[in-house]
Image 1 (tube, rainbow, N blue to C red):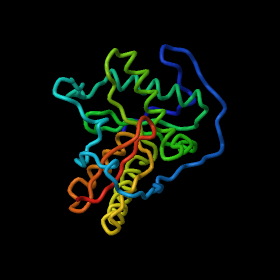
Image 2: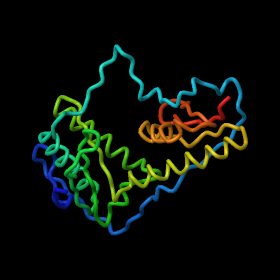
Image 3: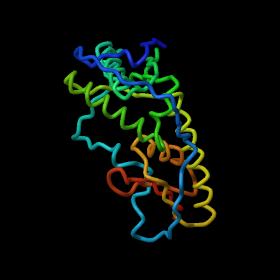
Image 4: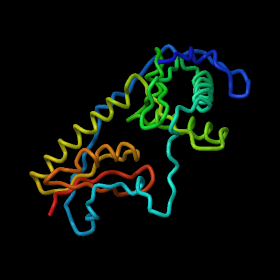
Length: 223
């Protein structure tokens, strides 16, 4: 991994200096969470049951911008500057790194340091918000979509592993009880993890319901 340096010394993209006092405390939100809500299965709760998330679906007439075939050096430099600026502005004592390998074509930046856990938040919500802001700023400055992921102390992998365990455990309960169960609201990426984990399950199926940040996966017994 390439080290980028400590965040508090970062300057705003474009040259504006930034800095704030460092925080001494640290609170990391562990990913071992996932509340299930059981409910009766009725006609109104049934969907296509194909285990797909409509947020990830695109029709044949809608173009999807794909990640670049080669490493995007321009985006990498700009993401590093923007990320360091945000961390310095928040007064977070941490260092940023960029992984040598991309993930599905996306650059992966890691944050490490005594305050890094502060950026995870409840179920990773703070991390998701930071990633969204960095993508938005960088995409606007580049004039094209920026493919970037941000990780903190391997949180994303730990969260994915937890979601797979939750999906299998809930699927077992649904299969034995015959009652559908709705998971907590999740991001589109997290919902895809659950859908894919249970795509070949012989006794349950998955679908998404709800709108916006309340959209969640429902696990239902197969007919």
